[in-house]
Amino acid sequence: MDVVFLSRLQFALTIMFHYLFPPLTIGLGVVLVYLEGMYLRTREPIFENAARFWTKIFGLNFALGVVTGIVMEFEFGTNWAAYSRYVGDVFGSALAAEGIFAFFLESGFLSLLLFGWDRIGPKMHFFATCMVALGGIFSSVWIVIANSWQQTPAGHVIREHTINGETFLRAEIVDFWALVFNPSTVNRLIHVWIGCFILGAFFVMSISAWYLLKGRHIEFAKRSFKGGLLLATISSLAQLNSGHYQAEGVAEHQPAKLAALEGVYKTEKGVGMYIFGWPDDETETVRFGLEIPGMLSFLVHGDFNAEVTGLDELEERWGRPPVWLTFQAYHIMVGIGMLFIGSTLVACFYWWRGTLFEQRWLLWYFVFAVGLAFVANELGWVAAEVGRQPWIVYPTVVNGELTGGLRTSDGISEAVRASQVLSSIIFFGLIYLMLFALWISLLHKKISHGPEPLTESPPEHKGTVLGAAAALRRHEHSLTEADEQSES
Image 1 (cartoon, rainbow, N blue to C red):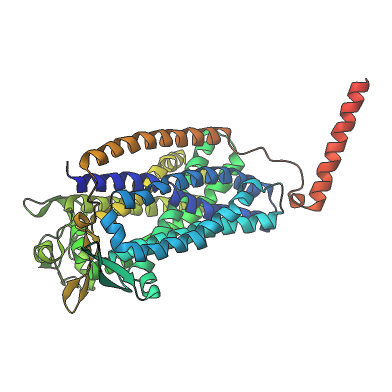
Image 2 (image 1 turned 120 degrees about the vertical axis):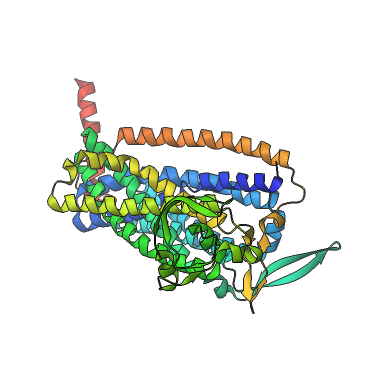
């Protein structure tokens, strides 16, 4: 098999498995901030109880996210050496910033979040939770900046370098802030964040709905479910607006990707938007499609009769992305998003009516809907990355001509062999299968155990001098009882 295809397949395997964890960690971080904030405001023990439980899940996902993320840094050097050389100056700055501003912030406060419940005061613990959640968000900022630069490069120049008689091109930063705020960064960053919030919210609702259906931890489950529903509803509605602005950016800077996303093979006026369909590259049509007439022209240009450029005019200049995979990934993602908007609004209606937790069919839906949230997050990246092929770094247009850019086939390591990549795919597949089984097993164990029973001790004294004094008195009392029993 082709070494380029196998290397792309290997990176797809590692990055998609890794991306199971960071969005869930970021989403759960927001949930933890909400729960601890509510506890500080109301002093209701149920909020502290919920925060303690979700912290355990958060810690598990954080650990697996770190472990699975390390692999990709080595892949850049082993499989994509030419690409690493081309983008090294750009990516080096972004990844260094991630380590300084994000990873140290997370790791510095993570121990306080996980182990500081009975050792520090509630306000200090809340601060640690906020810092860890903020660190996760900062980490995503620099990763998305680097990836967005690949989609819409800015703030750099292309220079030739010669080493040992070999000449190669290298992108070098000339304007750091232009790199950071390249044309797609802000829209893509907001879209990614909202996707993380949706996943975290649906994860919380899934487990909470399960407890409600089984009649376990009722008060905990109700509070957690309502918090998750509030976040999911707001985020799902916001994602619709975010997706629209991102699509406008794609239309402006990556017209071939837009054509692949919507199956626009030929340049036409009044182009419709497909709800679903089956792109056929041989006939260059979308078969079995349900289309909203003129909608794509309106969304891109604000005119139902505006012309949308198709792949027939774009392919020679930009290349042709894999249309079928790009189209299906994008439309399934959008379909899941619309389902989430409808289902969360229905749940909010029943909440308003006071009958939310009587709708067992709806609770069962939310138990399994978290799987769709994972799928939507993964497919969003599939559409974004496959849709920019055949470019690993997209070219820019200067005076009507394409400049810069790096094709995927030119980014591969010269020394790597197809057999080596194939064996590594098999090896990684087995390792990730074991890690996935471990993750599911530990999740099942923690969910089966559930939150700890509520204690009767005053929550406002935990982590304070009064709390320490109370604990000392209880300890002395237990020793006195033990002495009395031994004497008798």
